[in-house]
Every structure is written in C-alpha cells, then in structure tokens.
Length: 328
Ligand SMILES: [Fe+2]
Ligand SMILES: [Fe+2]
Image 1: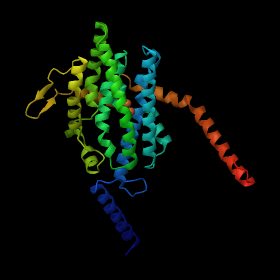
Image 2: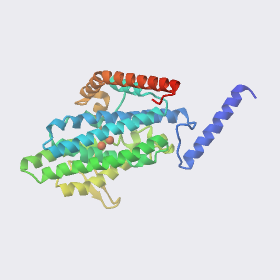
Image 3: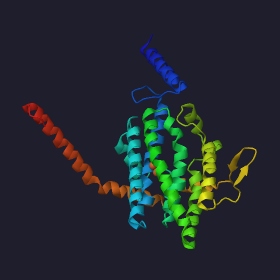
Image 4: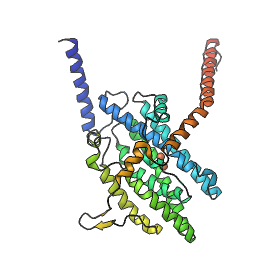
C-alpha cells in the first residue's frame, strides 16, 4: 500500500466515524475529526451569528441615553450587555474551529463579513425598542431554540444560554409595547408605527424561502439546522398573532388569515427585493453600522494593549516567583 492509499483509508475511517456521530444525533467536539465543508459552514454561520449580536447592540444602544425612565434605562442597558455576551460566546465557539478572533473582527470592520440585515434599519422612536424586543428577539428565539441541539457541541451549548436571555429580551419588548398601547393616542400610534416597520423585516430574518436557500439542505443533513426557513417563519407568525391581540396592535399584513385545512396562520407574499437590497449593503444603515464598529475597535486599541501588557507582566512575575520559590 502506498502512502497516499494509507492516507485515503484513514480519511474514510474518520469520515465513517463522523457520519456515525451525526447519524446517532450525537455531538461533534473540537477534538474530533470533521469534514472541511462542515468546518467551513460552521465558521461562516457562527461568525455571522456573533457579528449579528455585536452589530445588534447599536440600534438599541442609541436609546440608552434617551430611555424614558431610570427603570427603562437599566433594563435596556442589561439587554444590550447581554447581546455583547452572546457575541463573545459565539466568537469563542467559532475560535474552536480554527479561526482567530482577529480574523473575524477584521472581516467585520472591513465590510467583508455578513451579519443579520435586520440591524441595518434605523430606530427613530422609543417604540422601536419595544418592536425590536418583541419581533426581532422573538424571531431570534424561534431560530435559535432548535440550534440548542446543533451537532457541533460548542455552538449548541452557547445557544442554550443565549436562548434563556433572549426570552427576557422578548418579554421586555412586549412590555414596552403594552405600556405604550395603554397610553395616549400618540403613544399608541407610535407603537403601531414601529410594529409596521419591523414586522416584515423580522419575517425576513428566517432567510430566503426554502426553494432559494441553497445551503439549508446540507445543514439539515449535518444536524446543524433542524427546521427549514419557511417552517420557522410559519411558527413565528403563529406565535405573534395571539400576542398582537393582547397588545391591541395590528400586524401589517392584510392577507394574514387562519387556514382551516393547514390549521395555521398563513401570511401574504414577502417583498424579497427589499431584503436583497439590504443584504447587498444598500440598506438605510449598513455603512453607518460598520463605521461605528470600526471606530469602536480603533478607539479600544489602548485597552487591548494595556490588557496584553498586564498579562505579560503577570506571567513574568509568576515565572520569577516560581524561580525564587516565592509564591506569586
Ligand atoms: Fe442575542
Ligand atoms: Fe436579544
């Protein structure tokens, strides 16, 4: 047997082992062999997810200084900090696949990385904080609960913690809208206007229709994705309808109806041209979001340098301590 043949044999034994783990619906861990395409798919998905959490801090971060009360400010700050934490778990999960944090940051601030298009819309009113929590975090939960069972261990485990926090985010958004809907006419109009603007983009968060989603099938075979984009979107609409009734807001889809045969709510056609415009970087806030992230990264350079220097000195002191037998 030539060296090359041995190599091939080894690879296929590893591939078989990988296939067995997937077939048993068990987990792949960083130490395990995995096909290159599986690794690449995960790096792309997890890093995009991490970028979305980090960029997603901006639309709401804009309102921290303008929150209408101390209580609202404290809640909003906690929520935005949670999103930073989600970004960090996810960057760490992606790092276990062999990409560095610096590479991912560089891809983001040079505009080469994707993140969820939903964060490229502006937040002109306080009601946007309610609509984002209710609709955007709500859609995120529908998307992410099945990801808790993703076949890649670090990703699934990160999702468990993320989802617990997302349900708090959704509740706080719902509660902001409920308070506004119980207020003055102007407040009710503000809440309805925010729901009108965020409803369709939140449905687009599930991605293109199943027929136009080329990577979905493979991700389902690998147990990364558990339900199709359209299934998840449908589930989300079904969740929103009774909540909209409690709020007293109208979902801005005149064709939305209950289908007796399918026993579920069915919505009208989504205008995908807008989605693809925003995806192509021509959304209202694309350039602004990446610019703000790049500036924050540059302004934070001295913090990274100071932390690295502190770590270097600490290591040095510890090494000197162990040489002289003195505990550091
Ligand atoms: Fe999040
Ligand atoms: Fe969230």
